[in-house]
Image 1 (cartoon, rainbow, N blue to C red):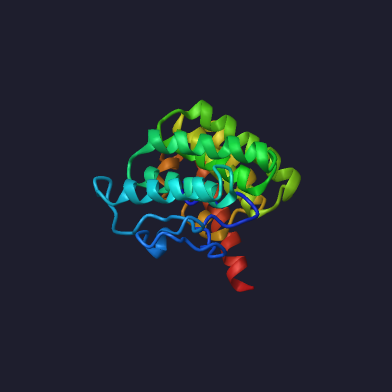
Image 2 (cartoon, rainbow, N blue to C red):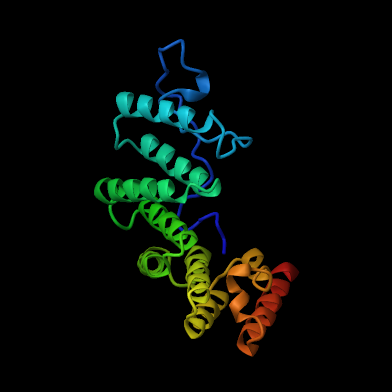
Length: 229
């Protein structure tokens, strides 16, 4: 399953730093400016003493200077949630994604790209917590919004369908998984994602099913066509 969620109009790469307001506290490192979005150092481990203090310090500064609902504050919470999930702190990540989703629904609206991003990040986190029915409900809501905003053939919509197919496969809903996966493959699934279907462990329960083999073959054909152009 693609763990880097790209389910909205905007990218989920770390948000660029905004230096429009300088931090006047000389004791705060420049990379912790309250108007810049925090991202965990790539070397940080779950037990690292640097991880949470740095993030919390940045959040405290942003909340005080920018406000708790400012978009940069919310992006710091979002990025922290991604990092916590990647380092095994899924319960805490879930709380942060629920916070950002609630704030964004209220301040940006339910169909805003950032709101949908929080919703799908929460769904991915719930999948990793094996709470498949909750995750599936969020994927479906995200897909409904994406179809309205982006259209049914957009690669972002197809990527969320792929995640729903993985969710279905993981929870034993084989027929649904194959149906949704076909929908994704036929309606814009990015070639790099389609190319990894056979090796995706989230779909391993589908291996041996001739319908899955046919989808893998179709995905390869589509990838070849794209590369030839």
